Length: 171
Image 1 (cartoon, rainbow, N blue to C red):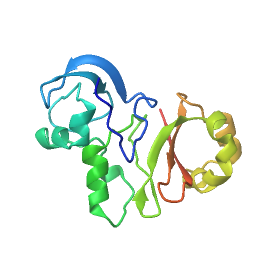
Image 2: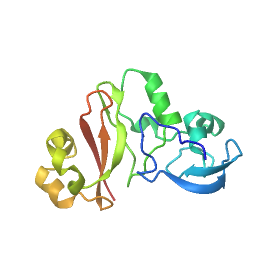
Image 3: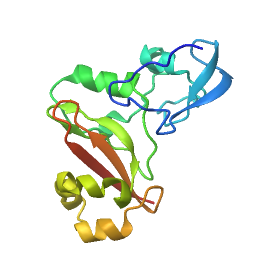
Image 4: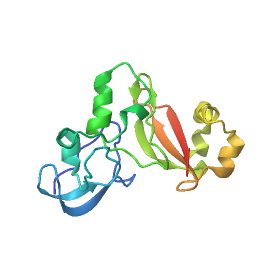
């Protein structure tokens, strides 16, 4: 079994459920693989069962002219090469409406996991700005934010300073 690639902006895609074990043929390299990507892929073609290695090397995005994260749904940073790595060589995540990738310290954050209040209560002080950005009070977040609930949290962490950020979405 080949070691899975490590993705800078999504270091735990098995934990987040975006890469799963499988016994499929990758449509990019046309080789049998033991892991496949099951998250969003924005392309004209309907493409499934992409192996993690074809994500990492950019062949999947190139072959199908696709993106793993909608580039219009990423906060803006100054380095366009980082955007290229995020949308073309990083597994995405699945959101209720539209996935949105956050940044901090002029770089994209890593996607940590899907969260509710229970998972973030110990770091809530870091996330007050994000609560406010979405128009929620901390009390509303405590009452309604649930992992896999109707009000869902998506936790990110800054690569540089380790500050957490939160994207919130509802079904």
